Amino acid sequence: MDSVLRESLCCPWCSASFTVTEACPASGCEGAYAVLQCSCELYPVVAGIPVIRKGPLGAQGQTARMLSELILSGKQREALLALLMPRTPIEDLVPRWAAHLPSVPGRGLLMHLLGHDAIRRWTSTMTEFFSAGPEGKTAQDYLTVGLSAKAQQKNYHYFMHRFGQPRQLVALSLMTMLQGAAGPVLDFGCGIGLLTRHLPRRMGSYPVLGADLSFFRLYIAKTFLTHDVAYVCCDGKPSLPFRRAFFAAVYSSDTLFMVPDKVSCSRELQRVVHPEGLMIFAGLRNGLIDPEQYPVRMALPPSAYEDLFHSLPQRVRGNTEVLDRYLQKRGPALGQSSASQVLDHDPWFSLVVAGHEDWLVDQGPFDEWPHAEGMLELNPLYRPVGGPPNDRGAVLYRQTFPSSWYAQEDGDCRKYEPEQVWIAAEILRDLALGRRTPAMEELIARCVIVGVPERFHGHESVSPCHT
Ligand SMILES: [Zn+2]
Picture 1 (cartoon, rainbow, N blue to C red):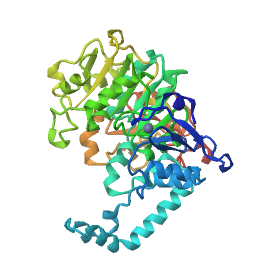
Picture 2: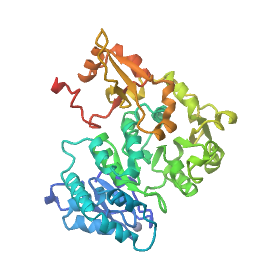
Picture 3: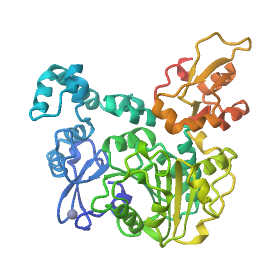
Picture 4: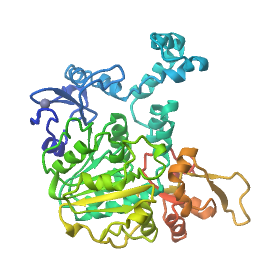
């Protein structure tokens, strides 16, 4: 198991250190599978990711102890499959009329009978996909299969179209502060690692740890987005599985507003970060704007977050202001908080809490565009219109939102991303060859060209191997 995991982890229930039993070395997956034991529980390490949660975790309700026993008996693949298999989307698999049956006793059994054949086919397809392993696949393949249920479409679009999104740019802007952190950093609620992948280059030799509730997301992060990060699957209940003051900084994007119990969560984050350290919360939903769009517990006003960290120096900035500076290639202005009349009208805001005031200053310019880190390609929101190239061989692309929800949540990208854009033939060719040229800079500045992880999706049509 990763050494930073050994140093940082402790049981969230009994606070004991773990003894580690590695899986049978003959299994061919040394280091990736193990069992952690404390005074109260066994927790599995699956595909290199410790799963420190209680209650049902697997698709068939398998618990941490059951998964640990699978590992100890040499059934690593079964443990992995149990955690990767999505919940059966029964509503999608029964005849359409049956999905509208009223909620009465026996409904579940009836639905299973009505969807019997479709459920069997679905289970077999999923088992085959996940059993085959990640070789030759991409993050998109996993997202397409794992989030294929209708109820997951919103999440699918969120992950696939995050590049260049206003909240992504704000989160990248705030990330520049971490360059001053001298110690490990925790990405709390790291998801599939779309921001986590930017952290190692800012942290130098200091370790980066990503934590998330979802094993499936962490598996994608670890397999396809960034290898030089250690990941932990945990839910923060009753506490986080990390030692006191272990981290120099906590970084978190689009997460804290989703956490139901913000008081204990913020208390826990303060416990695991060094008293002199830094906490960055990018992307908090403002409860003062369109409160009917979110459950009340999610959308709180900015003042509620200030109260959670009331004893510490902090700044609250409206995301629009952070974004405006980002588009001028400058980091966030943290010398002071946004004026309340600005904050009260911004649907999203961000909070930075620090162990001392020295952290909280206006940040300078970026040397490079953070959103261009990775393999350059056209922002996935842009699709060719389909007409003929113009007389200079340029192709017309149009920005297309994947859903009305996306347009509502992230439509602010229209401020800097053009609705239509002609892309010169040589730019398309250079992108395919992995070359960055001065002619691309204007398109990078407007997020028409963005940096994408290498194994994020397939590149059949643009790979130089095929040209
Ligand atoms: Zn324990």
